[in-house]
Image (cartoon, rainbow, N blue to C red; front, side, top):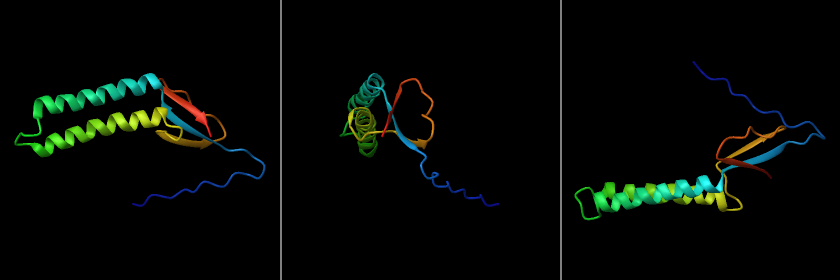
Length: 102
């Protein structure tokens, strides 16, 4: 059973379609970054680079650094975002997220 593909029609001439970037709020980003760093510290303390599971250690550290870095980039970088939404109306407000119009 196939899925039907839908295509968005281009905006009508003279209409304005806005693009919004959705990003985490700065307090939420700092909290998530702190959690990412706790993940890294726990990996260093509990697993350690010299253990038999060195691959797990490096994966654990990489995930923690990625979570912290991506969240900080999304919140603080001028070009950072989690999601882009295009439409006539602004997207609904969500707790812990900020929306800016491009």
